[in-house]
Length: 153
Image (cartoon, rainbow, N blue to C red):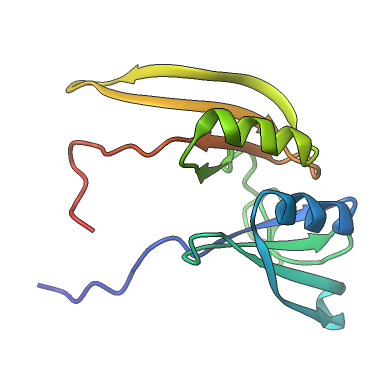
C-alpha cells in the first residue's frame, strides 16, 4: 500500500481584468486577503492570495499581464495547449438563498438558480445556483451535500 500524499484542494487561480474589483468582490463574500507579492520575471506586478472563510482553501488573483501557466496557454515551448478544462469553481455555503443575495450585492451576475437537482443512483439531492464573477469566472454556490461514496472527514 502506498502512502497518500494528496490531501485535498488548495486554491484556484484567476486572472482578472480589474484586480482590485476582484479583491473587493471576494472580500464582500467573506474571503480575506492573506498575502500579496510581485514576481517581475513572470510579468506579475501584483498577485493576491484570498483565504476562504473556512480557512481550508484559497483563491489566487492575478492581473491579465501575468505570464503564468494557465488553461489555454502552454507553460513551456512545445507544450500541448488545452482549453475548456476548467468549467467553474464551486463555493460551499450554509444558506443558499442568503448567499445568492450576498454574491449579487458583491457584484456577481446571476446566471441560473437556485434550483434543487436529483443526481444519479442512488439519488443525491443538491441545491445550487450559478453566477458570473467580476473576472468572468463562473461560480457555483452549493449547499452542503454528501455523496454515497464520501469518506468520513
